Amino acid sequence: MTGKSIKPGRRFARPPTDQTSFTEPPHAPSLGAERGAEAGVAKATPVTALSPRAQSKTALITDLLGRAGGASLGELVAATGWQPHTTRAALTGLRKKGHTIAKDSVAGVIRYVIAPPTPGVNPTTSCMRNASS
Image 1: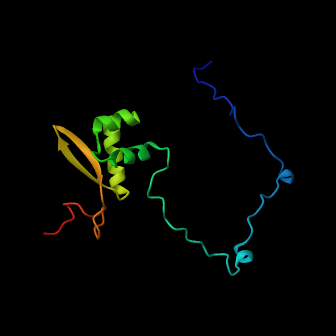
Image 2: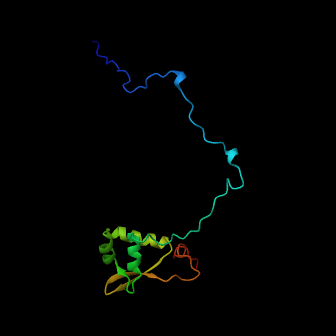
Image 3: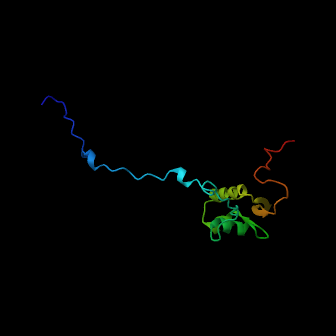
């Protein structure tokens, strides 16, 4: 041998096919056939899904925050089994969904409460960065 390696053939090459056994794939119906009175009209569904599912952990958090005294981060972590940073991220997600979450320090422990919404204020744009003064 001269030291050159011989390149093996393709192990996973497709076997040759004859052109007579090829069949055309089925085509989708043409758009011209569907153009009726209701063909391109999409029905609008009302958006009512701002509240979480009944048995989700997010629903559990909103229930705990809706109590009279609210809930501390430790209580939320114990109830959900999440890490503290995940629980704080869930609070941020609730804020983005339109809930107003207030926090208050009671005896050195921060407690979170869902505050009643302020009329006429959009919670997604009402932060200090967007305020013009």
